[in-house]
Length: 262
Image 1: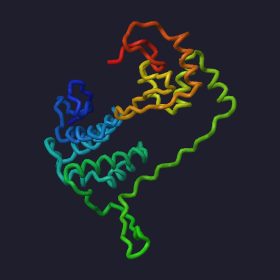
Image 2 (image 1 turned 90 degrees about the horizontal axis):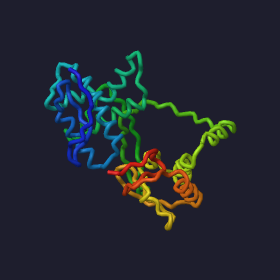
Image 3 (image 1 turned 120 degrees about the vertical axis):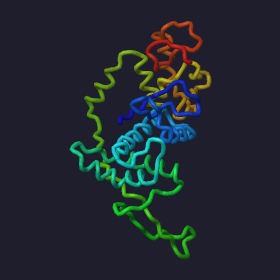
Image 4 (image 1 turned 135 degrees about the horizontal axis):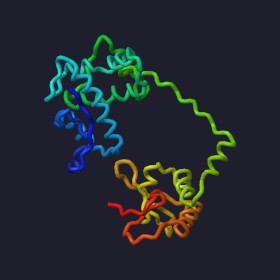
């Protein structure tokens, strides 16, 4: 039995567009119900897609077990798929899974268990715990015993090496147009993400007020100030390179072609 994750565009707003289906295209209702509940937190599309693929990894493993049930999830399945066993199975593979991926899969599995059984994931002989004495918040009296969850896989720290002078010079010399400089200014001086720059429209640029509206994760809108340097490069792009269009909503510097926003 095979499973895959698909994206549907015919669902209502309160449902996750990413669904897990089998080889016949039938949805796993209990799994997609959990994905639908995550929509209430208004995560981004990429976050929902990552949730679907992490659960897809679990259900593919579960389908190869004799206690598999397509219509529901039971206590034994999640207990067998405990994060400790996930780490053990990944360590036995020839191509080992990265520690951060194992930790993410373990975290979504805990949330799935709490969603259906309303309790913490049960203990097991493979579960490692660490306890310590937690001090009282007021500074006196008896403390409380704190219990840490499963020890996560050790993620190696990234070694960030600064760029050399010639690399920085090559980076700045690679810009050919005012549009390139506008993209860098919006991300460097205003701290915008790349997807936020691509989602900008001309109606979001308020030059008279030196502000702009940014649509971030979860469709949240925030207003940010526009530095004079960014305003100058944006106005230069509008006067020299912006393509002419009769659209009601034309493109921003993040768009290569003029297109109306839906």
